[in-house]
Length: 389
Image 1 (cartoon, rainbow, N blue to C red):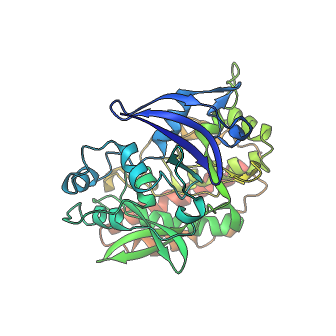
Image 2 (image 1 turned 120 degrees about the vertical axis):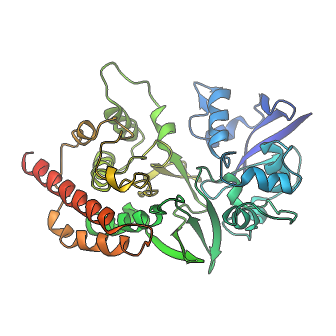
Image 3 (image 1 turned 180 degrees about the vertical axis):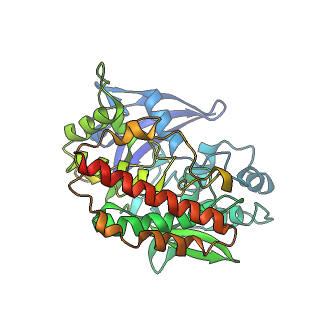
């Protein structure tokens, strides 16, 4: 079945497209609003052409992954399993998100962004609730929720708390170390970074299970542009490394303090032994009104740190890094200026880490002490690096 939709950016129609639900593919675009195409998803229009491949990649990245724990069972029990994802979102939630202001509607539908967006309006918590409960439900689910446009494989859900939107996220089942890592990262950032350079995480408990919680840093007037889209702005020159290419792209977009803030991310990820700083969990904040790139996005999503998925014997072992090089020593070598780094601000940080991790009953004392030892060693390494610059 073929259906025509309009891609909207807040109140602005961007272009129409035809969707084939039998093949789950976008068949064609109709450029009926040429003066508005500058409001299209960043990078989807290049050299005056709507790039179907880039648009589909963008679209896929805003969907809850089928691999999310419990999702298939939830949809099956609710009689929705045979519907493709686009139809689910269009019929239930207009493909709305809390990371940007894009949405879709059938061509000609009289629907207003102010009446449906998740920043101003209530939304269902059904999906998040049942996913956290293991996928068991006999309810008719309300899919009018930003949980359907949150990517990643970890259990997570959006919740409205006193009018603000918060993301709640679980850890893995073996150690559930990720929520504690998020709090440790927040404590590190409080010591080293400016307040607007990171997202603050806290821990809450659900039936004694620790979960991380953070306030949404995107507003109804902004959007998050992930690094993978920024990286496609220009072709990589011969002998240009991934780090220099990314910084060059940011500079071309007039993003303030691009190199220093990228360096801060690299150093903090090194201190935390973050093994999952991929191109979809950092980036830039853009105004949806002016389309100006306002600033580097605050650091977020730090759970996959501190050997979170290794057994006690392997804490401290080698791992492949991201996003600019596979090896930590190569990636940290990109940083040429550490004037912002003040090791004195990290006095007592090791004790703080020990105290936070001790709240997790799944972690042994041996594991905690090895993590603390590794953190101290990494702080000393950065100090030596700074002294030799």
